[in-house]
Length: 319
Image (cartoon, rainbow, N blue to C red; front, side, top):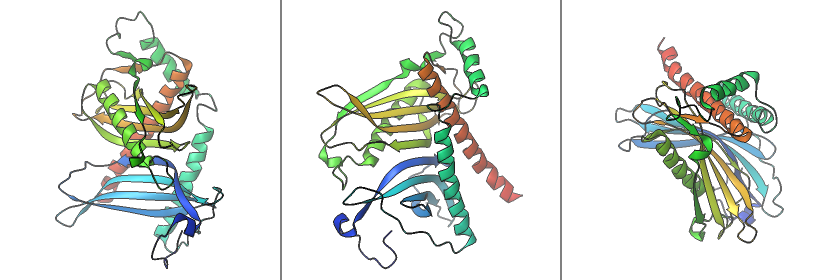
C-alpha cells in the first residue's frame, strides 16, 4: 500500500487510509509445533482487487541442520478504508514479474472465486444436495429416534453441547480504532472452542485448522460480549484420529433491551491428541441444527482434502 520508498508508517490521519481484516479464510496446521525450534513467519500479498487484498502467511520451523519445515499455512482477506469517509480506498495493483508470482496471483484469484461460490452455495441460501440430504436422513434413522437405546450412550444431541461465557470488554485490548482487537477475540473463541472439544472428545485435542472467521461488526470497548460454542460435526466412528468441528459465535449484548448482535463467527477443527477414534455422534434435532450439522460435515471434508494433498505431495516429489 505504501510503496517501497516509505520508511515510516505515520499516523492514520496522515496516510488517509487504514487496513482491516475482512475475513480469515483458513489456517491449516500441517505439522506439530515444538518450542525448541526457531520459528519464521512470513507473509505476502498475492492478489489485489479494487480495495481488497488476498494475503498468504506461512509459519516455518528452522531445524539445526539448516532444513526447513512448513508448520502452518493461512489466507487472509484484507480491505482498505478511507480514514475520513470509512468508504473503500483503492489499493496499489500488483506487478507480476515471475512465474512463481503468477502462480501465487492465480491462487489468490481462485481463493476469491471459491469464497464467492461458497457464499452462493451456503445452506442459508440454497437447500442441501441430494447426497447431503441422504446422509442426514441416514443419521436420523440410525441415531435420531428418542427411544433408541442402542445408541443412547454414544448419541449426543447438538443442543446439549452448548458451552458459553460472558465477558466485559476492557480498554487494554483495544486496537488503533478504539475497538476490541480482533486477535484477542480469536484467542477467546479458540480457548472456548478448545474446552468444548475436549469435553466432547473426553480427551486432550490438537488443533488442525481454523476453517473460517467472519468479522461482521466491531466490538466496542465496555460492551458485554457473549461467546457461545457448539459441536457441529464429528468424524465417523472408527476413523483415526477422531476429529471434531466446533462453531463459536460472538455477540454483543444490549443490556437495556437484551438484544444480541452477532459480531463474529469462528469455525475450528480439532483432533484427538492420542490418535484414537470416538464412538460419540452429534445428532441434530431441529432443521436449523441439521443445516449446521451439514456445514460442519463440509468443513471436515474440506480439511481432510487439504491435509491429504499435503501428505501426498512429498511422496510425489520423491518419485
